[in-house]
Length: 132
Image 1 (tube, one colour):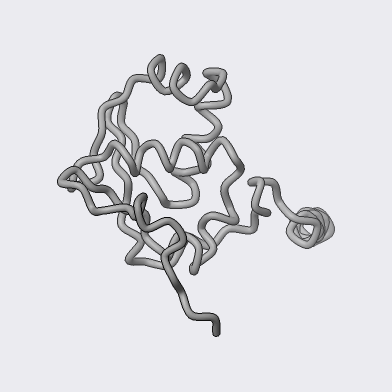
Image 2 (cartoon, one colour):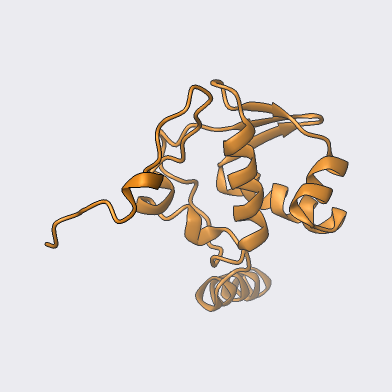
C-alpha cells in the first residue's frame, strides 16, 4: 500500500467549528450507488447545511435555485432519498437520517428503476396469479 502524504500542505483542511460530515457508510454500504446525480447533489447539500440533529429548513424554491434543478426534478430526487432511507421530509423540514441500519432492501437499480430480473419476477408473479 502506498504511503499517504499531504500533497498541498498550505491548503490542508482543518476541521472548522461549524463542521458537517459525510458518513463513510454512504459508500461502503452502497447507498450512493442507489442515487442519481440529482439525488446525490441534494443529499450533499442537506448534509452540509444540517444541524447536529440532521435538520434543515430549506424551501423548494431555494433548493431549486441553489442546485440548478427543475422543481419536478427536485421532487424526484427527494423521493429517491426518502425511498433509499437517507432522509425524512415534512414540509418545510428535512432530516438527514442516521445510517445505523442497513439500507432498505429495494429491487431497484441505481437510477431507481427496477432491474430486468425484478421486472421478470413481477411479470411471472402477475401471470401466475392469473392462471392460479
